[in-house]
Length: 343
Image (cartoon, rainbow, N blue to C red; front, side, top):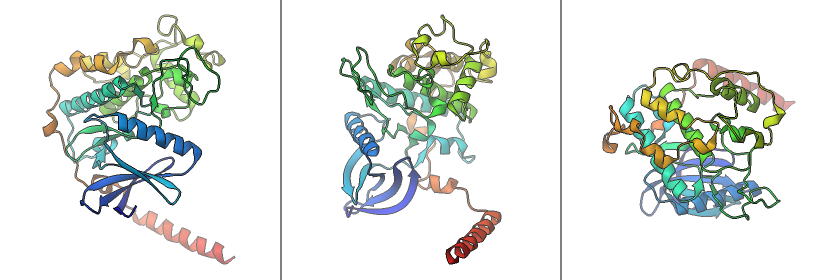
C-alpha cells in the first residue's frame, strides 16, 4: 500500500471500490480496485486475476499488480479516463456513426481475443467498457469471468459432475442476460457474451437499454414480446432450460425490426439480428462479427488515433452537482440525525 498514493474514488462495485492512485516511485497514474475480504469476493478476485494475466489485448484493461492490506485485496490496473456510458451521455462529445462503429469493432476484437483464450466474461455491459485517454475502448471487470472447460470435470458452484460443461446460471446483469440464463440454464458457452454484445451495440445507438426489465420476470416478458414466442424453429432446445416450462406464454409475433431498432443502419440491423437470437448455436461469434459487411460499408470505422479522447477528469466532470434543494435536504437530515443521537 505504501507504494501508492491514493488520490480519489472513481467507482464502486458489489465488493468494493475503485480509486485513482499514483505510483510513488514513477509518478504513474493507476486504478486500484479494493475488494473487501469474503469467500465469494476472494473467489471472484482470483478468477479476475487469472483472466487478466492470461489476456494480452489492446482492448482489455491491463493488469499491473496485486497485494493485500488490512484484510482487503487490491488489484492495480491501468488507469482509464472514462467509460462508455459517460462518453455516450456527454453532450460536449460528438459521437457519429463512424465513432460508434469503431467502438463496436474494438469491442468485438477484445471479445474475440478473450474467447480465443477460452475465457468468457459473463458480465459484459456498458459500465464494464472503459475508454482510455487515447480514446480506446477496453473490456474491464472480469470478476465473473470463467475459463471454458472442455472435459467432464467442468463444475462451477455445482457439485454433481456432468458429461457437458456446467456453470452457475447466476451471471450477467439482467438487462444484458441471454435468454438461456434467464431460464436457468447451467450449460452455456461464449454465446452468452455475444447476446450481451448485441444488446450493447443497440444501446450505443439508442442511448437506452434495448430490453429494460426491472425484474427477471419482466425481463423475460420484454424479450419474448420483442422476439416473439419461442418456437421449434427459433429455439429448438428451449425445453432443456430448467425454468422454461414453469412459464406459459401468450402467443405473440416478433416486433418488426424497424420498430425494435428504429432508424438503424440496415447492415447494423442485420448484424444485431445475428446476435440477438434465442438459439445460441446460431449467434455469430466475435471473429465472424468482425467480418460482417457493417464494418466495410460507409461510413467506415473512424481511425483509432482520431477517436474522441476523454479528459482525465471526465468522470468527475459528469458527476451531478448538488442543487440548493438537495443541499437544504441534507442540512435537514443532518439536524434530524443530531436530534436522534441526543435522544
